Length: 536
Image 1: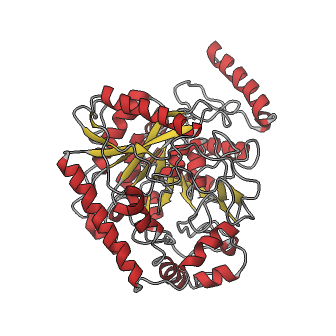
Image 2 (image 1 turned 180 degrees about the horizontal axis):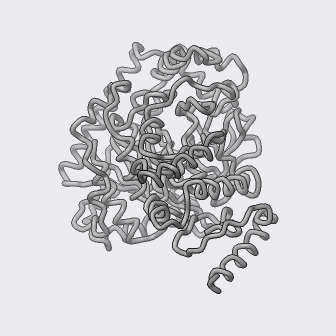
Image 3 (image 1 turned 180 degrees about the vertical axis):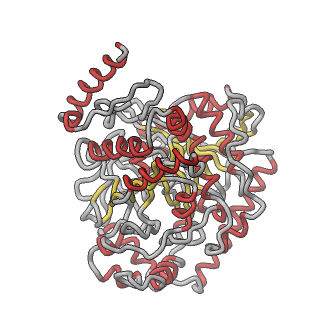
């Protein structure tokens, strides 16, 4: 074994002893004759190269990730990202190894470990929606996105914890998810488990859902890449809805390229979700085609500096720390060749977003009730029954209540739709007038808050609502948005920068985000989940 590898393993062992109380001593040593493959921060390409060179098998890879989950999820930093593990994962890995030896990879995601948000149905594992009400509920079908991932060769390690019924980062089924960069802080939600799990290197790809920001929030505070696609691009069939006119599924990954690879698999028309018919003719051959380091050269980008959240505090130290990171990121965009229109403004942006996202209480009850009625084995069949169980965490129950009794036939819903169309036209006009490829802004204007002690019992716990939340613009419009790591505050808390484009411009956003990612290299793994002893 080369001397530098011996030094590395000794150093890792010392680090582990100090950070997670000898967890390393409990792990089996993984031996590998090659230094070429490194599990920490591994990408789809890294894994497939390791398979091709014989450095690792599918089973060996899966076992390594399972060891990381065992070491860090319920012990050590206690991130609490996993709701249920796939009981058949090692058997599936063995089958993939046999197939690889006989005929080669099963698809573009052959044996790529993937985490799936527990809002998405799986017929071989419970789907809890983050709630104790559904703790033992096993659907009788797989969601379309799960089917597509499996057909592409992905291996589902398990289902991730999520904010109960798609809100925040706590749920009666599991407790609280924690941020790997500081476990005392908010990991953002509601795709909290997927976000924290991918950040901590528990898998390579993550399925997340975004109604008002639940892909991009966890990505931003977890130093990752997260894409909220154009709403009709990815099928939602087999996913419990929250607000169908803004609900969508998207990837959380550690690199832009991996997000693009994953979108290649999950995008496209699904007759079970008719809205995806809009995607026909709008899906490129591959979202990876235009990924290049000079992808920002000549791009015209409008910079939104005004806070979109009325609760942001530009005079606070926290705001100024985030702003300093974003300012450097904007300079980097220019240095990498972008032409900036700085700033651009959208009239009454805070009020306009509030009149759409904040005012829309009309879709949820009808959508959830219809969804539950489709499942003969569901333990309850309506939002009212859910609330009457008394099991839902107080914060989520308090936010479900205003939806009860509201329908899309209510006059107020017409105002929501009218306001949405007005904002869409306003933003499209701005982008046309300035000839913009994208808009850019901070995903959050403040760092993630400290998790309150009473977060599971208080309907309004401190820090549960993200301060300075700029995520609402994309769902209010229905336009795609991509988050990429922008850097860290002095305390080591990640900051995300968000690119927003016109409908079906995901390939453009990936090009811009990839060039920024490659030119800045801000992605760093959290110190709370280092390499385990013997991990390649």
